[in-house]
Image (cartoon, rainbow, N blue to C red):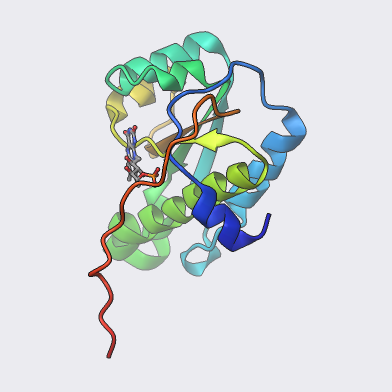
Amino acid sequence: MDTLEAIHRRRSVRKYRPEPVPEDDLRAILNAAISAPSAGNIQPWKFYIVREHGLRRALAEAAYGQTFIEEAPVCIVVVAIPEMSAKRYGDRGWGLYCIQDTAAAVQNILLASTALGYGTCWVGAFSEDAVVRVLNLPEGERPVSMVPVGKPAESPPPRPRRRDVFVWL
Ligand SMILES: Cc1cc2nc3c(=O)[nH]c(=O)nc-3n(C[C@H](O)[C@H](O)[C@H](O)COP(=O)(O)O)c2cc1C
């Protein structure tokens, strides 16, 4: 699948089949994640690959009961490490670059998963404190997104897009 096709085929999937994602596919998805650009190539990120069912359930609870997180066979929790970016870029690194860098990694996860036939959903609504507790994250690691990954059990239609967003000069 070429890049534009993956971009246009991707949907937020919220129903998954339970079969596990083979490790080779997971590694390809994670390799896409770390291939994202980052300010100064600092790569201020970490990825927790959560397959254990009890942990997935706890993540779903941390995400205010978004149960599809538990249903998908894997959930990738993307963590930013603001201090790494702040060392070189100060406040802009802390508050902006590390967030943009991890967002780029998330988008690569979504697109690589689509290309390999998996469904995903970018999940941002969760209690950061609860996720820190569930995964026992060390000081300085900020969970910024969760991405459940699995074979889709639904084919959602495209969601509408605003078209009045381009300013041609
Ligand atoms: C930063 C961010 C946070 C999001 N958080 C959630 C979430 O917590 N739960 C959820 O079901 N979808 C979440 N989404 C998915 C959006 O609802 C979805 O991308 C949007 O409705 C467009 O649909 P599409 O992804 O199928 O194109 C999030 C997306 C982004 C970019």
